[in-house]
Image (cartoon, rainbow, N blue to C red; front, side, top):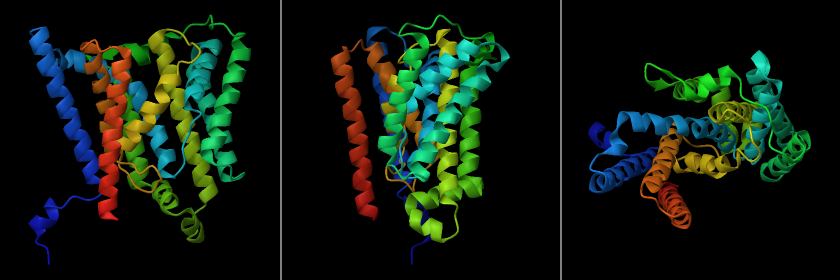
Length: 322
């Protein structure tokens, strides 16, 4: 029989990816600090102002990753995120006024509802259906703008949420914190969260146990769409306007952040803390590569190599524990 101390030292399959991601974050900070000290004479990367600035930029990715995690926990994926972000931003800036943010969230909710219906009721694989929805959204937005950059501007409230600070802390970071708390409470304290994990482990078993699987899938996709819509309105506020393709840079990093953080790509297992660390890891990695003035080709190679390395480590851990 294992002693209590030995049990405390034993790591679960969910703990290991979180620890690996945390260690890699520390490594990135160390490498970046050594580089800035040797070239600039100051530890720029450890400056609270600089870190808050990076987290402010990373908050947009964090909001998207939070929604993506819900869908991946189900064993599905949402590839409509890029143009959900763009469509929400474009429609929010087009409407303007007090209705701008509700319209942006509403666009995301509508897209999520369509995705959820297609996956839950039409039983079309999420990868195919959401990719098709992404293409439809792109066509609709090109038709809406006539193929040109929108001439609309973000509202003052959108800019406030994305750019301004309260007591030195970016408001966008506070928005991400609220979203994070809500997601953690949903996954750990509600029946919906338990159902999401159950469906991810085995949808048929969850259905036979009395779970309304179709309803849960639709809700998860709606939440993912709404969070993408929120990210779109924040991005429009940060850029002061919406533009075509503004969401393209967030699809792969959002998926990578979720999986690097330990969420099983086939669903059923994961912790939101891991997703938080995954987002921070990606943001800091991009920051360090920018400071080093790494050429774009080299940045892509290093960025992709880190993701593959983390996934290989995580995958090996899964094989050992199964």
